[in-house]
Image 1 (cartoon, protein in one colour):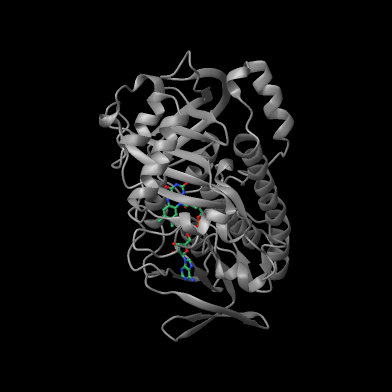
Image 2: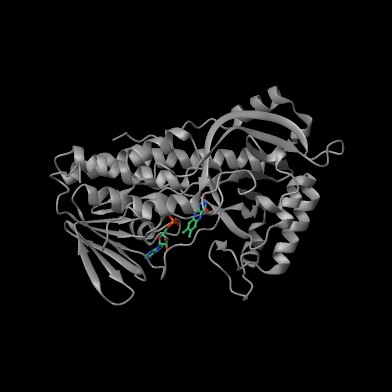
Length: 416
Ligand SMILES: Cc1cc2nc3c(=O)[nH]c(=O)nc-3n(C[C@H](O)[C@H](O)[C@H](O)COP(=O)(O)OP(=O)(O)OC[C@H]3O[C@@H](n4cnc5c(N)ncnc54)[C@H](O)[C@@H]3O)c2cc1C
């Protein structure tokens, strides 16, 4: 405990949710000297879904230095978004419209989660603990659990994801509107690829009327980085009309799911229809990847800004707060930033009230900006995507910069 804070020492903190943002909050606040208890509704440790995350490499470096993620966490670097479109002349790999320069680090969600989970101090993380109500009186917040017990805290941090009970409790007026499209996701072992070459050096973004697909290598499930042992992570944004979304999200047992069809829940007919659509829209190479993948999953796209990140002694972090569309690539690290900045605020201010108030202002602005950024990307790359096969690099650049204007400080966190 290198940075014990007078304000935080002994502060009783309850955390709701034990995924990325919840684990980051537990580590950070325990290091400050808080007395932390984390409640996770799942009965077992969260499962790796094999999917990938892309962030600027400086973000990984900042969180390595901060002691939140393994120095050895396997990461690939990509230098461009390779934007392609299927044409008659280039049916296999598609027409190359633009190599949009970027610097991204690509890693597995599971490796990031495990890295955080093993840093949560022993005795803090409690599974099979669903929180069903959050109330406040004076400077105390009370969590009611599904088992009938109640626990009282000086501070409650809600890290309970996009359908957050915390957000609904603090801001019942905030809605999560459906954006009119879904993210269909899967992965494929590199050994099953017909050829690896086309996917080297970049994040491939393959456009079609009404959506696009993203394809890139991430390290293997055991962190392997050698060619031949990697995983292709893919995700296709595809329209599903609002009138059809409830039916689309009905699982293979006939149950209407809230927001997503996790791996193993998608009806065969739905997966077959998505694969048929992909074969007709994507260049053959990318359609083959999608076609060869099984246990695919789908997520309705929603987003929301929030009026604040905090009310009284209850704070929101990660997807439980401002919830951005996944285009922004910010989900996991936005949650870690929320937690790290909360810890910085508590360690540099002399009263809890001042710390929470300053943190709230800073994170509300940053979080809502990321939501608007994701929204602009959704409009450009899905809802109003132009035919890239008629555009060259210069035209692509001016189209993109005219639509995506929101500047974000999404990854801004102080180094420790
Ligand atoms: C199992 C899993 C796998 C994922 N895989 C990927 C991936 O491969 N790639 C990617 O980019 N993103 C992935 N995500 C999403 C990504 O982690 C989030 O967008 C981002 O990390 C924000 O994390 P979060 O901690 O704010 O929310 P989430 O990751 O959604 O976590 C919320 C947590 O709160 C718990 N919870 C919810 N309600 C309650 C309650 N009432 N009481 C107690 N606990 C509650 C949930 O069980 C969950 O563990 C995954 C999320 C999960 C849960």
